Structure formats: C-alpha cells, structure tokens
Image 1 (cartoon, each protein chain N blue to C red):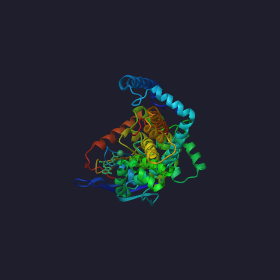
Image 2: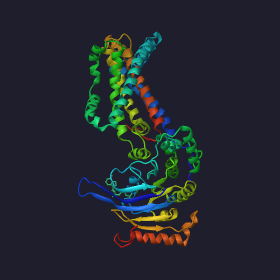
Image 3: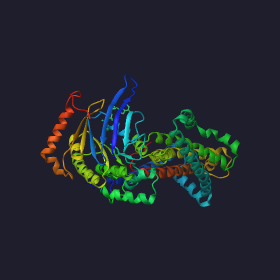
Image 4: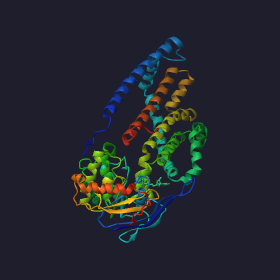
Length: 271
Length: 259
Ligand SMILES: Nc1ncnc2c1ncn2[C@@H]1O[C@H](COP(=O)(O)OP(=O)(O)O)[C@@H](O)[C@H]1O
Ligand SMILES: [Mg+2]
C-alpha cells in the first residue's frame, strides 16, 4: 500500500521557502521605499510642510506615543472598528447563507446586494450621524455597513460554488437541509467568507477616517489625522496614516493566516 | 437482502432536440450477499442506474425493491461509494467515515466504535486524523468505502471506485475490496467498464448495451473464493474475460438473451 505520512504535505519545501523569501523581499522593499522617500523629501520636494522626512515622522510618532495620546486614539478607533467588523461579519454570513441557499429570495435581493457592494457607503456617514448621533454607535454602524456586503458576496459565492458531488454524497446519506448547510455548504464556503472579510475590513479602515472626520469624535486615529491636517502638522498626519495602514495590514494578515489554516486543502486563496 | 430492479427506464430532456433515452427497461436481481458487477461502455447509463437506486435521480420509470420493499428516494438501506472519491476536504479520515452516522443521528459513543473498527478494517489505522489532501488516491478510496460501510447498508453501490487509480494501486485495491467484503458481506452492485475487474471481483457480471442501456447478458463467474491475485493468471479467468469482451463488442441486436 502506498504510504504518505499524515503530517507530510505535498510541496513542503515550497511552503517553507515562501515565508523566508517573502520576509527578505519585504525588508528589501521597505529599505528601498524609505530611501526613495528620503531622497524625494530632501532633494525633490525639499519642503517639510509638503513632505516630511521619515525621520521627522518618526520623531512625531515617538512624541505622541510617549504622551499616551497615540495609544488612546488607537484604542478608541479599534474598539468601534472591532465591534462594527464583528457585526458586519456575522450579518454578512447570515445574509449570504440565506441568499446563497435560497435562489428564489436571491433573485429579488441579489441586485440590491450588488448595488450596496458597489455604492460608496462611506458617503452615508453624515446621514448615519443624524440618525444615531455623534457617539460610537454611528461609527460602529458605518464600519458594519462597510464590512457586511463584501462578506455577503463572498458567502454567496462560496455557498453557490459548493462541489455538486459533495452535495450528492450528503443527500445520499439522507442529510437534512440544515445538515447540508452546516456540514457541507458553510465549511466549503469558509475560505470565500474569509476573503470577503478581508476585503470588508480593508474598507473598514477607510471608514475609521471618514467616520471620525464627520463624526465629531473627541478621540481616534481618524480625528488625529484630520486635526494634524488642519494645523499643517504633516509629520503627525503621516503618523496617523501609517497607524491606520498598520492596523489594516495586521487584520488582513490575521485573516489570511486563518484562510490558510482553515482550508489547507486549497492551494490558492479563492479571491 | 435481495435487490430487484424491474423495467427501469430513464429519459433525459434535452434543451435542443429529442429527449435522450439513457436506460431502457433495465431489469436484474442481486441475491442477498451476492457481488454483482455491472459492465458497459462509458455513457451506457451505469451511473444512472446507481443514481436511481441511491435516490439521486428524480425521475425514472420502473420499480426497485430491497427484500420486497420498494425504494422511493433516498433510502437508509442503500449506501454509495462515489466515483470520484468525493471526501469532505475539511474533515479528517475519521470524521469523513463518521459523516453518514452523523446525518443519520447515530449517537456519538456508538459511532466512534463503528468508525474506529472500519478505519482499522480498511487499513487506515494511524491515519485517523489525516486530511484527504494528505492521502494517496488509493487511501482516499479506502475512506470512501469505509464511509459507505459505516451506515451498515443492506446494499452497497460502487461506481467505478478504482477507475482514477494507477494500475498497480488499482490491482491492490481490488484485492483489498475482496478482503474487506469477506468481513462485511454486503449485497454489492459494482459498476466498472473493465472486464478483468468485474471477473476478478464478482459472482455474476451483467453486460450492458450502449445507450439506451439494457442488460444484454447475465454471466455467472464460476471462480472459487477467496480469490487471490493468482486468479488473474488462470486459464478460466482469461477464458471468461475473452468471452465477455466478445459479447460486449458484439452488435446490440445480435439476438443474445436478455435476462
Ligand atoms: N443529468 C443529465 N442530463 C442529461 N443527460 C445526462 C444526465 N446524466 C447523464 N446523462 C447522459 O446519460 C448517459 C449515461 O450517463 P451515465 O449513466 O453517467 O453513463 P456511465 O456511467 O455508464 O458512463 C450519458 O450519455 C450522459 O451524457
Ligand atoms: Mg459513470
């Protein structure tokens, strides 16, 4: 009998080589980027108000970090961002399962979901503030709105793409409709759902800035950016943008990791 | 339990042109504990017969019974080993084997023992926690077989389970199937397009005509059991294979008896 050890995966060598090569490429591209930035700031733009040097940005970052302001801002933004993302994620999965598994309902609702996915929902921010006030609720809802539709669309795509032969296996064993969803379609769709979440969270980061810009917040990274912009504190503005980018990259990386962890049989990410 | 199929006909509607008659009054019987192979060219309707029996084919004419009780739709007395192994990629070996027991609401404690026994029987002890993508094609078909056996069906349907395997693995798996079947003596209907495979495994071979599929001949295989790989080299084996190959190649209307 042909024996493959349970732990042995195909192309183990390739899998191991990728992260190392990836990290070294990341370092090289980071260093090159910073050098280009320095050259651009010092010799091309040559005006710290228009473009600060990385060094000036670093100083600004250290200053706000020391005073504790930065941490405070990050925590405020992160709190409603996390809650909004979770609400959007759960809502997106539920809506996606409903539409993915019920063609009749989907025929009527799909166009609205596509429209909502494409529409610049951040533009609703002022309206949501009128409805829900300037507190954290309106901000939470903006994030949820930005996350929910990409997740819905990913879930629908995943459910509908379920391998027909797996559906037939389950049918032939007498699976109920609930079994089919829980034991076949949703597990199949998982990596599609997570891809949707990745896109949604990326949009949510933009939502942080817009929500705080309109939202009369007293704390938050978005507010920090807009305040810095108003007083022409360009280094601090850059600090805020970089913090948001790092938050976005962090969450996206975690989701990518989950995608690989939970669907190791897929050799490529689905989106 | 004896399996009986009477006048089973299936016609598929086609978007353009006339409907496609795939099965035309197919009748046969499989005795309790008998291993019957269904052989025919690709496209003659073998899979369609198994789909009818397992409740996956919504429209057909004719009747199917097990021990005299009719099959209508999905039936607990039937389990299918699918052609492509169709394992759930997110389930481990043991969770795949347990699938049928789960959807049939078999208690966890009882299910665990059944699963472990079958994993051992099909030779996958030590691989309980492996995932399908970590297994070879032959091992995946072992899981596929164990998953069907786990629900303890009266009738086991197998749809060309070894057709995607390389020749050496396929020959090994054929003998493995005989060994496993000697421990779980189910009534088996085994579909293949390979005559050697049918002769090696079966008590009886049903030959089908090209579309529309009919049972053209019903040929007993008088080889003793247990059968080992040496059977393949005996004169009787070759004589049977040759006779069947000739019958299969003959024109559809050659006047041969229909069972
Ligand atoms: N759902 C379907 N709709 C239309 N034609 C089908 C369908 N399923 C099978 N067929 C046709 O029926 C014929 C028999 O198919 P099948 O039973 O899979 O043959 P076999 O398993 O013997 O190769 C083929 O010509 C196939 O194209
Ligand atoms: Mg077939």
